[in-house]
Image (cartoon, rainbow, N blue to C red; front, side, top):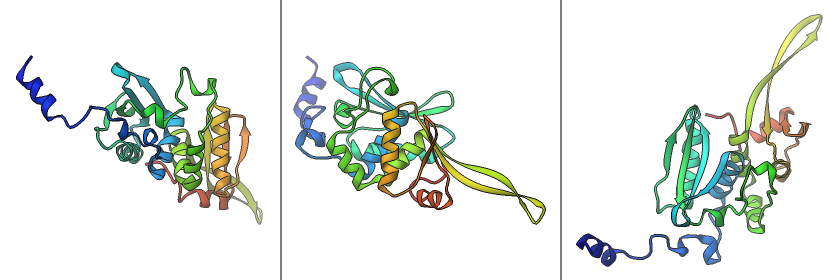
Length: 221
């Protein structure tokens, strides 16, 4: 046995993955703001995959043209799991924000085989409590992953002259009926009206509703 291995055993404070690092394994809860933001991102563009020794990779796929979104995802992960690095993996057109941990399934019990829209997505009671405490950050995660803020326009005749009017609106699209219901519920928590132009598309279009959602979400960048 090499001396370096013996030194590693001697100097190691504890196991590489200590169960006490996970708040849920010690009857606690994750930090509400970063967690619900990351939960929104995960439900939209995230996944968990199991690797060696039951260590899971959390991957959040972010469009590379939105560096602020990437930074926020990395920051949320770092707050929740501060003892390990957060990786940014470049791919064609997107950047995966990646973190490895045995306890990611504890924080995301919605993990399971197959696409999210083909299985039930239900929140645990503790997740609902955290979202009620920070609904705006949950909406930020959802809209930053599967939503957008777009500029629409229309024309109207005023005193015989055709004038163009521009107005912003938000759209959120997801094939999962359960995730769509969660988005609707979070909007109701902050009293923002919404409508469903299609089964898989939610719209926030009224001027006062867009203004109310802007402080929570805003344009992607």
